[in-house]
Image 1 (tube, rainbow, N blue to C red):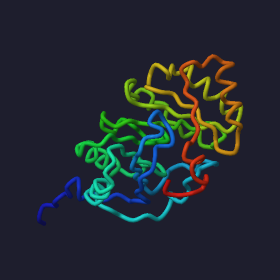
Image 2 (cartoon, rainbow, N blue to C red):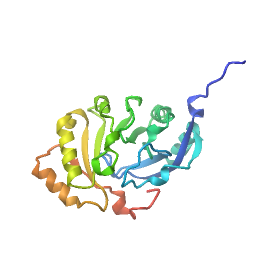
Image 3 (cartoon, rainbow, N blue to C red):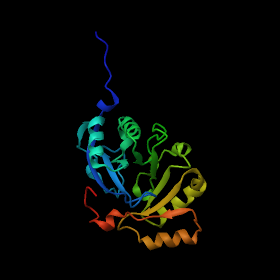
Image 4 (cartoon, rainbow, N blue to C red):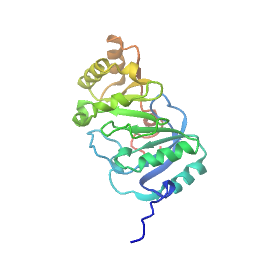
Length: 227
């Protein structure tokens, strides 16, 4: 049989959900114009997930086709998101291709899959799952060892006092404020009063934890897509 020719990186196929330009709504990059590449599929089913439409469907696109779309938008900040982007092995060569093309690349991941497969230049925004998500047993705690203290961020999406106390204890147990660039506490939209989380942070002297809101849900209707 003739030798099999492997596809080049730009010919590698990714299962895509959508690509759009908006402002970054979360993390320390909030407020900046950003291209969002939303991949299909997710290995988790968080109770409060707001992107369930990304679990299924989508269309196959080559990395080359995705790069062409990003280039046409003309914004230097790109986030790969989902679903769970690392549920597709082709997420890694996609990130590599974007970095090689000169983009600043963020990846929002649940932390349930290994993050050490990603190139060092990627900013990993790792969303550790709190108990009220019903998915906290899927957290891969070994990922904490792979965090880059000058670059990566850890996010906790909090739905209750129980979630807050769990997050506070994880931050302290793993010394997260020393292990990554930022630790982010964010309320589940509509389930907990944001002021309550702020009060708890101040009461517990979590001086290095950053509170955040999902900015895009205040600019546009909370369930609007493509923003």
